[in-house]
Length: 200
Length: 84
Image (cartoon, each protein chain N blue to C red):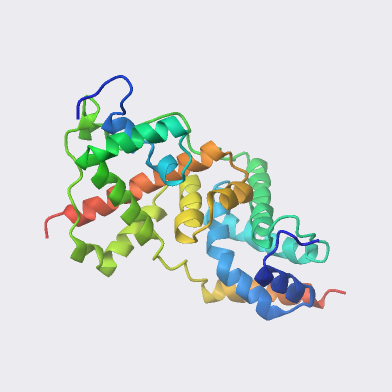
């Protein structure tokens, strides 16, 4: 049993089974923000997402004694939230399927002539990149993404999950995960470029 | 660079960078990608900027849990704990 769990996750599961509040506090600090972003893939407001995530935590606690460790604890928690958010979204008849997957160019087509760069990317001024403001620009760009792209880039590039972990937690196909991540990164790069290249 | 039938255009290449970085391109496609990059400053610069973007995104601190949100969740935990 519990072959999908690392040592730290085994410790957390044991602690939760012993009703250890510190372990629960650690989990919510690690995952709450990312869980809200996942819930927002399916429901229409932040308030509903918060509701869904809170109910999901209670479901996690109620299920912890029966949790068999066939997936990691992390994947299990994210799946509970994703499933509950989906159900909630459907119930409200507002389920928002993943933002379109039809092939659309993600980089501004105006930058190319006959497939070649008309305006090749200029190199970025390093001193501005190292400015705290650049991080704020990235954060704002992520905040402004469509919900599915925002959730995927948060897990992959902010939290540092692998592609496989994200696919498992969100039940996405390999292609869809990558399309969402690609679109998100292209937009964040573009926002950063706009900030870095603007006249100072 | 001049384009022939089996070469990627810059516009095609930029759509493949995420697959490339995840090592998910089929081998033949990867060869075309590498061949293009080797001779194209614009695409080399673009790929580098995507790498920089990913690295800086990784420096964002995960959003802090608001104290009220934390208090509400801990309250839910205590309710659960009190249950028989």
